[in-house]
Length: 387
Image (cartoon, rainbow, N blue to C red; front, side):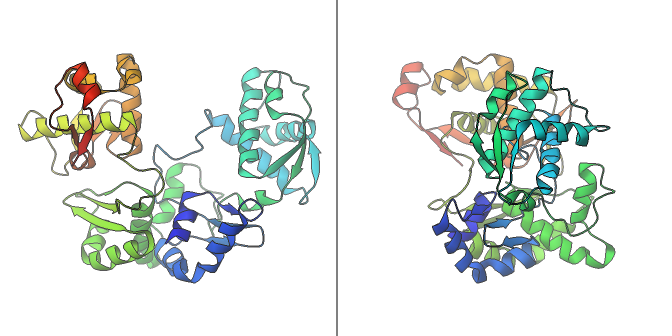
């Protein structure tokens, strides 16, 4: 179980960086290979340098992506850099100037770059720092960050050879995929393989994401969960450790409290506490009939209505929040809280309106009894209890 969790928690395991973990995971392969290959339908790369589980999600979600990247160009430059490394031998050294010349050629016609522009240089710096942290490059002389301030900055790199294992291998032609939805369509499959794809889709969603929702118009996944509940829970528990919670319009795989892994919600984070408090307020309003709930347990709110709920929550419980959150401007607090809730599938931003998801009614929290409601009481007894 711990070995599979290690693969899920990391992008890959590099032998030269963590030899003990590499061999532990390699020895445990027979224990989780069926779960990975048949139920998740993922490719497992095992060679003398690295072990990598290609974690392809069934659909894109707001929290996915490279955290340090801030612009679309960052991803374009990463692809160009991978193309450049593909033509190099393992251990081959090269200069930053050679890389920037090659990137200009690769990007022509797609997303032209101009190294005289500071924003373009900073974008490449973010990419270089990221690939260095991932082990694709080793810096032999110089500093990548210097390129952001000085166009003629020179750096000597060495190609580790890991770049060939970095992209996902989809096992089919992706040349016609132009949108995220095109890639997501792989999870639905052709007519002859939809049964297998449904199994993979359900297991992937419950392994990678906080929840699996369905609608009245699309209940295929629900039917599979309902009919295979016993085996679904057994397989997930044996592989990851946890319980399956099935509700009317959603299913959740909840890790065992004594052995969680990865990033969890709720956790020891002030914003997590605020989300619990806000969800509790929303649930109370729904129970009293002040907020309408759809048949699929989704709640439709305007941005203005959601902002009002955030302000109400702050007025009622803000004295128990940390100083940093209390001092945030209303706009900043609203945006940070919405981003956090989106990342945990508690809410969805649809532009003109928001959807509050069923998980918001499941994961709620309040200050423990004895919280006085004033600043002194919050400091003395500001703990949370969640339901």
